[in-house]
Amino acid sequence: MNPSLLPGQPHFAYRGDQLFAEDVCLGELARTYGTPLFVYSKAAMLSALAAYQRGFAGRKVQICYAMKANSSLAVLQVFARAGCGFDIVSGGELQRVLAAGGDAAKIIFSGVGKTREEMQQALMAGIGCFNVESEAELEVLSEVATRCGATAAVSIRVNPNVDPKTHPYISTGLKGNKFGVAHERALQAYQRAAALPGLRVAGIDCHIGSQITEERPYLDAMDRILDLVDSIEAAGIPIGHIDFGGGLGIDYNGDTPPQADALWAHLLARLDARGYGARELMIEPGRSLVGNAGVCLTEVLYLKPGEQKNFCVIDAAMNDLPRPAMYQAFHQIVPLERRAGPASIVDVVGPVCESGDWIGRDRALNVRSGDLLAVLSAGAYCMSMASNYNTRGRAAEMLIDGAAARLVRRRETAKDQMSGEILLE
Ligand SMILES: *Cc1c(COP(=O)(O)O)cnc(C)c1O
Image (cartoon, rainbow, N blue to C red; front, side, top):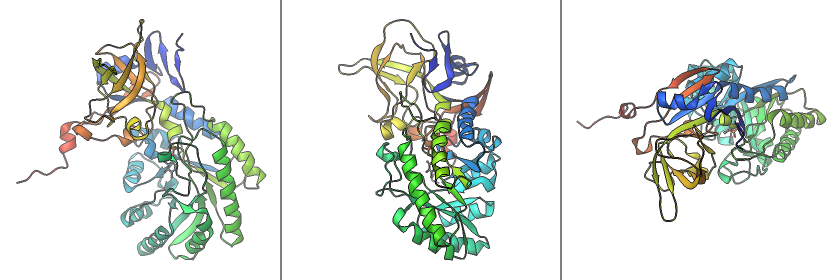
């Protein structure tokens, strides 16, 4: 009855009753390395990337992995070796890309609040482009670049005011959002950028939100951006590249986002129709490259029957998997070893002292204490958002490549957590 493949995650499947990632039995991994444990499939990452590469075949494109989705060094190495650039949002992320062997010239720096220090670091490293989010930032960046004797390549992030139809916390392209320069002010901002001494206008960009499951918002944003390119170039400012951001959704629970190759076939047809098909293009996918390439393994600590709810207390928590607490997000939860027998309805919760610390509500599971579970679709915005709340060490991480399993982050200890602190005399 149960399909052996997990929805949206073809690199994770049951063989008999045991859940595997590629050719590795996850139950064995959990017993060897302990839990909570993040496990990523390299093949899943590369096949997600390949869908974009197919979609853009024959085009001038730079795919910049939006690394805030998962910034672990081994993940960055996989994408760097596959030729990706990176979309970064902080000086810390810059250092991670460089540590992972990424090419600085393929880095674009996004974010509404870059500090002078971060701008300087990025200029010194020789990054490809700054995605500037306000007119005030243009002034500061020009000043910093001039002081460093450098010229900063810029693209202005335009807010196209389209509704991505996603959760309000992850929609970024509407008028009420803090992101980007309003569409109406964009031309003026470009004129300012072109006049500033430390800047060179390189392109234009937009990013309308995350977990987008429809094609329509992308088409609308593309039209709005191309209208702007027309008017900016008519004002005598050439736009080198067009960056369409990231945001493509994944299947968490029967979601049906377009596939990256199909989506881009349609978008590129529109681009061609409007005469922009030969431009240099950029995209900034995050979640869609890693989200369904990772799972989080966890152990059932206690079953706690109650009058209104039955709880299944696991050893992973909101500090490891923050999306349910932050966005009421849904992650599927499945056993590492399937067992026959009736399921009961439980709320799957973590040990953290917050009622918001739930991972899944009203799930049908047939589990006992000591059982191992996998929280699915945990490759994006989980480890990179993990915290030490309750002085919980961050989980270990493993990368699977065929039958090989490699530990790529050891479990964080309490000593690690305290290492930067200074006791009173
Ligand atoms: C977060 C972000 C992305 C990636 O979004 P996903 O939904 O993970 O694809 C791309 N560009 C910018 C500017 C971002 O902030």
